Amino acid sequence: MRRRKSMPLLRIPAAILEGILWTAAGMALCAAVLPVLGLMPASVMHVTAHVLWCVGSFMAGRRAGYACRRHGICTGLACGAGMCLVLLCGMCLSGGAFSSRIGVRCLLLLGSGAIGGVTGVNTPHKVTPGFRFPIRLHRHGRKRQGKDPVKRK
Image (cartoon, rainbow, N blue to C red; front, side):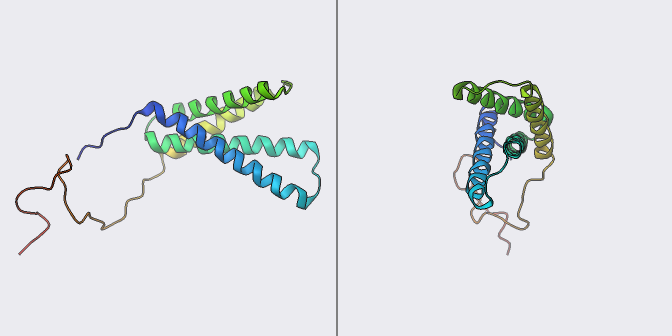
């Protein structure tokens, strides 16, 4: 049975959006925990932000690799580049100063996205053993005519 493939170009932006959501959720969790633990030094906050951006890039690459099922490194690099672009646009819009570490940040995002793409390609799809649809449909959505191969006398 042939599967209809969705548009592959739409998988990467959707995965990047999911990576941004992972990053935002992690930052919101850290913002909720921060008052409980007391004030953290600025260096710890920067490291936490770097780690959360890398986790978001990894999850974006993993999602895109899982959806595309091929070219994991290229798909992950594209997701890492998209996350890097989002980070740079956010820094420009917020008026943040670019430091010499921006190249390291971009390399970390590209690397974690590529690793996520490889792990997403190599992740097995879940298939429930023994599951069958109760009604067998023709590939155009109509019921099959004639004898059902499942029923036996």
